[in-house]
Image 1 (cartoon, rainbow, N blue to C red):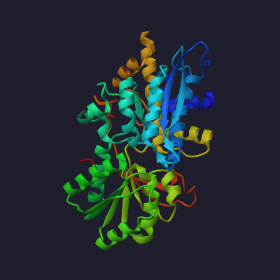
Image 2 (cartoon, one colour):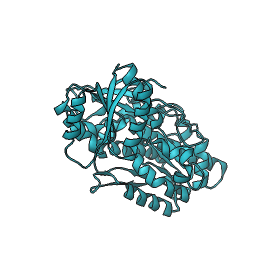
Image 3 (tube, rainbow, N blue to C red):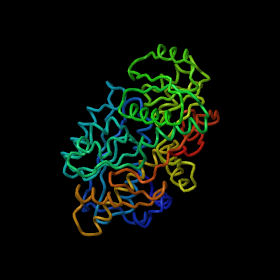
Image 4 (cartoon, rainbow, N blue to C red):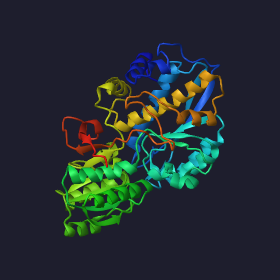
Length: 414
């Protein structure tokens, strides 16, 4: 639990002190009604370090709300679920589906946060939809999940239930293609993906925009994330001599690709989406293999913003490490749910899954990343994609994203 003083500082930085109540107020009483929030993250496997930061951010939001009596008469209880398994080595769609059923079967769970991975999201959303349980993801970016074209598959009950505090790969992939063409001035690219829902989807959107920008897409291959050796495909790519590689995927395949690409083609331009951003990628592949990689996130760059300074200091003080940007989008997901419950309670109506979903549709929540609101499908109104390059800072921990990812710019939008 964070101290009340830290909670007060934290809420002040997000411009929601008024909305969430004074942090110096008395703790919530035992007689309060309990609002359960289910949280699904990939806490086991290749993306665990990123998941821990997202978990911490979520916990900070609800700790501050409970300590500050943000919603008088209500106490928040977070139910933590892990969709990563040792067998999968990362997120496991089957476990994600099991977690969704657990949330839906608990009538006291009225809202959710997560998942962090799109493959898990695709497995969970039909179940959450049938159960009428809305969730907010802080890092899942596959656009199909919220697209009206796939509504019968991912929201069979009709109403949008998948909300995001990040934008989607309909922007992350194409905007990185724009960056390759306009900023890096590459003429050719070879594309790889890790066969997962996220990796395939972001690679698809990158490829389509790269071709529109006139890049020569010299080929594309799919990697098995459990395979140990990618040297055959990398040797083939080396013989074709493209200017660059783009990898769509997450850490399980990404760390092996980074190491082996460095061994075979150390000077080639290499880049990827937010699956190549974070402590898991840094520590898994290590320097010098990760040096020079370009990575995007599907959000504004937040941790260096002056508006985030007190949040960052509070986080470091509590957890002893630096947050990354998705730690903040996770924290903001908590703020949005807290705001929804507060608005419902103010009307005197019951806090139910139905009322929470309706409140999310009309959200306008001040946060570190700006005012959070959603379109009619649950997607974040803001479309910012940020670009970084891994540049070694030997004076800082080599697995610290805040130190090792140098922010370059917002990616050019199409």
